[in-house]
Length: 206
Image (cartoon, rainbow, N blue to C red; front, side):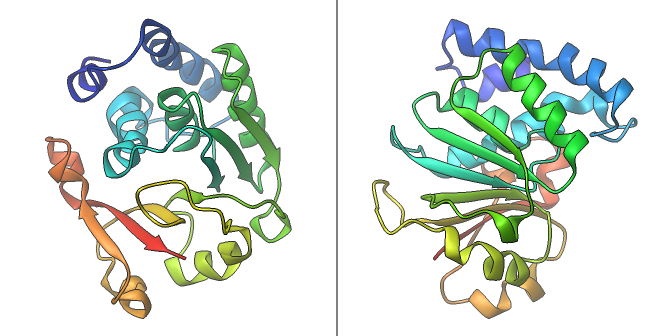
């Protein structure tokens, strides 16, 4: 939790309690349903929570913003973002039912009122959202094909509606089709730490 407080000193007492509760909740659920690599669960705050919150450094969502977390797994980046932006609405979807069960139970346990989690493939999601958020679910061109239909026309934020995608490694090939509009921000520009050096946020207005 120290890392979170270092980069997000503006958290309320309730947000700190919610974020602090994630450690035990994810450890307990991960023992039953493997949603985070067993080798990685002890790095929950750096590799999952802080990584998810890098999107909040890229754009501070205005109250009332709607976001779709595409391929949420056990709730990332959606649950940390929903904690940080309590006045925004988040829908978390994943094609694996047991992962959605974990996301739902975690959200309920910490009292998140701005999250709905659904066992759903992206192709079947019909809602409209200002932003799609995602963590390396699939190559960017494939993601764009699926979620274009879900981008709302109503604008309320400082950046146009679109996708925020968290990606590591070599991303040149998958961003090439969007080279004139995609913005790539190294997460190391927000957070120190070796693990973030190869990690990026790709923002794509749609």
